Image (tube, rainbow, N blue to C red):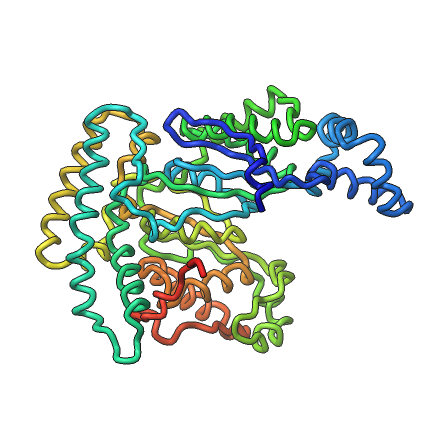
Length: 451
C-alpha cells in the first residue's frame, strides 16, 4: 500500500540517539473520534448513525478537549487509543515503561539482537564508563562460539531433528547463558499500545522516575501524543499530585532488601475454608485453561526470592501479580548458573572479569540509580511477588517448563511445590512439565520469521 509512505508520524529524537514515534494509522475516524462516538453512545439511544452525523458536523475536537481533558471524564479516554514505538533506550528504561498493570506491547527479544553492533548507553558519559560497557560486550562476543560448541557436545542433534531448528535451539540456549554478561545499559526497542487514559496516567509517574533517561522519554512521549491526539492531552498538572508522585517515586520505586531470602513463602492470606467451597473448580480445570478470576476473592500469597535481572525481565511480564522493580546492584552476587554453564576454561576468566568490573563500577562514583547501567543482567536481585491463585497458577504453569530460562524455571517450580503443599488438600491441581530441565530442540521453533 503506497499510501502508507505518505503518512506523517509524530517523532522526537532522544539525546542518546534513540527516538520516540507515535504511529499515524491514517484512518478517517481517528481514536479521538472513536472515543467521542462511544461516549455519545453511552448517553443517548439515538444510535451510531446519529452520532456519526454529529461527528461530521462538529468534529471531535471540542468534545474531547471539554469532556475528557477539561471536565475529567477519564473513562472517555478508555475508548480510543494508539501505538507508540520507542527505540534505542536501555533495558532499564524499557522495564520502567512496562512496569504498569495495563501495559500492552512488545519489546525486542534480546535473543535475536546482534550485540556486536547494538548501542550500550553510557549515562555517566566518561571513557571509564564506556570501557566497562565494552568489556561486557567483548566477553559476550568472544564466548558465544565456545559456548555453542560445548552445547552441541552436551546435546547432540537427533537423527530426526532438523538442522536449522537444532541450530536455533542451540543458539537460544547459548544466549540464555551469555545474556548474564550483557549490561542493563544495552539498548532495546519496544512498542506500547494503550488507550488515551492509560497513557496519561502512566506518564504522570514516568515524568518523576529516578532515571533521567526515563524522565526524558516521558517528556517526548507527552509531546508526540499531544501532537497526534491534540485534544486528548494537555491535562492540568496539579502541584500537590505532582509533588506526591515525585516523593514516592524517588523513595519507593525500587525494591531493596539487604537480607533477602533465597526462596520463601513469606505470607499466606488465602482463606482455605472459602477455597474449599470451590474444590470442584480447582479439581476439574483442564490443561491450558485458566482458573476463574473470581477465585481471587479467596486471598493472596506472597513469595520472596533471589532472581537475576535477566530473568526478572521475563517474570515482570506477568502483570496480574504485583512486583516492585528491584534495584540492580552487585550486592547479592552473580548468578551461579551462568558460570556453571560456561566451558571450564572460561569460568576463571569470567570470575576475573566480574571482580574487575565490580571494582571499575565502584570507581565511577555515580549514584546507585546510574550504576545500574553498567551492571550485567546476571546479577541476583531480591524479588517480592504477590498474587492470587488464578494469577499465580497461570504464571507457574507457563514458566515451570523446559522452554523457559532455567533460573526462572527453577523459581516457578519452587512456587509450584509450595502452592501444592499449601492448597493441594483443597483440590488445587497444577498441570506441570514432567521434565522441565530437559533440553528440547523444539525451542528452535519459537521464532517469528518472514514467509
